[in-house]
Length: 392
Ligand SMILES: [Zn+2]
Image 1: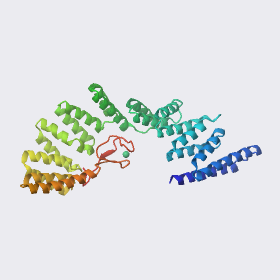
Image 2 (image 1 turned 120 degrees about the vertical axis):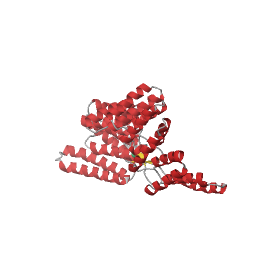
Image 3 (image 1 turned 45 degrees about the vertical axis):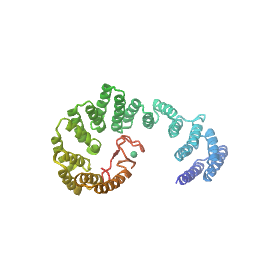
């Protein structure tokens, strides 16, 4: 595929030179110069087409040093090297373009942007940061440079700077970044909580919720802090707020909600809530929690019947697993019975262990646990529980 792209690019470059030669009425003096240029170019292209990219890059670098007449294709070729993973060649080519004497400013800034991306691909974040900062200062490619700076600060976990660049990017590009900025504030809040700086953490959570009033993550951090400090009612309210914002993450904290209700001895109230909630919620977690509550308050039989009825509506391996456990508890009378149930349970557990139960809705990355930032495509809040037979 990459070879094909390279071939197409090479062909386009050749065509462009041809067009340039025909389009302009070239004076004799210029013609000689262009012929030389043309010759060098086709020599480079020949190396490229024969997969000799080391020789090709030497020819193109020499060309880049002496002329800007083929600036655009040279720039594109550098970008192609970057996409192929040959970042060192991309840097060399873009560097030689930038170092050209008398290079028009518009070309220079374009090459700076490309080289910033090269440095990012090579993991040279400090160098990339310098180039993008320069572009922002001279107001050239400001949105792209700010977005790249924001990506760099995220990689460096410099959340304050990430917030600044994302906020500026939002203004200059008109593209909303409130979801991302709210997550950056949550990152800062979690960092403060680890350092036992609760007051500052609360400030960041308030910022997150003012930027994105439906930020589930900020609400969950609040709820868990209340729970940690045994402020059960406040924790319950915060968990309910998170459900109202978006109940897609309910499976992540439904057990914690149940625990908080049990601490204030309001399990009946929670049961009523869950009975209503499971009517609209797609997953199985609230059913499992409610079944456990029935088991403790009204006995195994009630729990068993409830799970059986729910499994008709919502077929689920996790539901089946609970049903097996309830059956084992109720019916197993001999060691042979226990062994039979254990074999079945092991099978179910193996089936569950093989499957990812979270997936990024942007890139499809599968994970066993929730990531607020997708490890693959780096989107914020795109990894969500999977609903289905073998998952939530
Ligand atoms: Zn993703």
